[in-house]
Length: 103
View 1 (cartoon, rainbow, N blue to C red):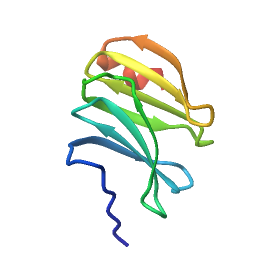
View 2 (view 1 turned 135 degrees about the vertical axis):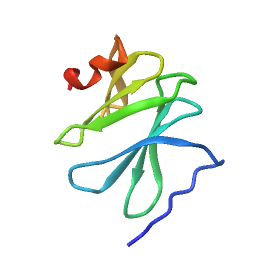
View 3 (view 1 turned 90 degrees about the vertical axis):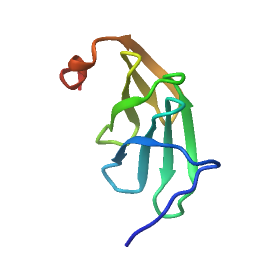
């Protein structure tokens, strides 16, 4: 089955990840540096974080318990988001090639 998700305006998506239970889609945005959380079943936008402030997001992943999101942007920052409490837990300035060893 194919579903479409509509934002308020056309924007480029740099990366996607599904939650382990496949109920949420996490999107990394190239223009605004946002991480967005979508409900897969309804196609509604649940939350969004502007953590990378205008820098494209290079990669992202979600924890196995669907609570923590880690994103890495072209600004050389790794951000850790707590979805349940809706806040950034950690910001770390690193070189991009170290991102996957961080996970």
